[in-house]
Amino acid sequence: MNHEPETTHLTGRIEKITYTSEETGYTVARLIVQGRKDPVTVVGNLISPVPGESLIMKGEWTKHPRFGEQFKILEYSGAAPESLPGIEKYRGSGLIKGIGPVMAQRIVKKFGKKTLDIIEKDTEKLSSVEGIGEKRIAVIRKAWDDQKEIRALMLFLHAYGIGTGYAVKIFRKYGNRAAAIMKENPYRLAVDISGIGFITADKIGAKLGFSKNAKERIESGIIYLLFTLSEEGHVYYPMSALTEQAAEMLGVGTDDIRKGIKAAETAGKIVIEDFDGDDEKKEDEKKGVFLAKYHYGETGVSALFGKI
Image (tube, rainbow, N blue to C red; front, top):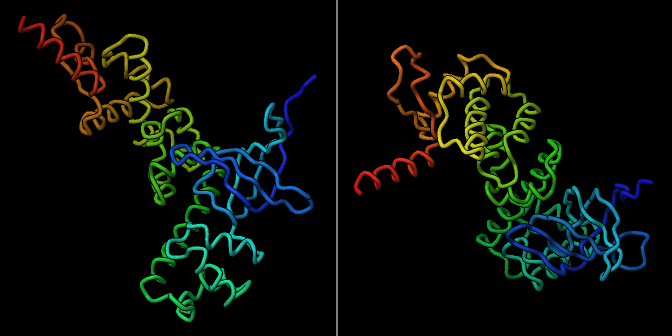
């Protein structure tokens, strides 16, 4: 019998943040959910969660042995609150620089349910609230725009199959430029983000329309293959064998691989060494390809022994 939890959807407003890690985004929060008498405990990776923020979540109900029923978040998108209590909590949460709890009360008292529309479309009207001048309006406007970009990023990442845990890592690394960076070169994820390897990055690249022989894909694939070979004990690999294996792995021609190797060498990601060998061997068979970081270690050790 299959006892796997069923995936379901849940929408609610954050009432309280019990715990959150700035590094990983892992959060425990209490949520107000319509139709439920008591707040619901939710756990998962969230980007800069704050009281008052509304969450639209996909996840599963679990039973914690100590803390009881919890909703484990697998994916989510954030939304601005619609109720007055939610707006006041959201505005006074510290999420938007320039608006603390006292100022939030003043703004909501002045504009009511139109508060978010004012901040979104007509921030100059905030100057009618005591204590808000042009400088603070500029800070509020920028912070609000940043939050919009974060919500858009979450939707973008989930559309390409990136779970919330990785989404948090990507946001921490790239900030609001994450979507633009991924569209430009999704294969950077394999190098920059712990836990996302070439295979995952390649799937994202395919969804974004990158062709099999895209230079970004080939260069990243070569680095991935060299790294895999290094884990098998190969400090370097013969260029001829590397070319053949990379072509087979990536489903492209050897000419594309040779261009990719050259590009990776020019970028300083790999080092190609000429080795003495049989004169009858082809040129590629006399060359070894190192990942740059391993070449430094290898030549450093060789130089050390040469002095002994």
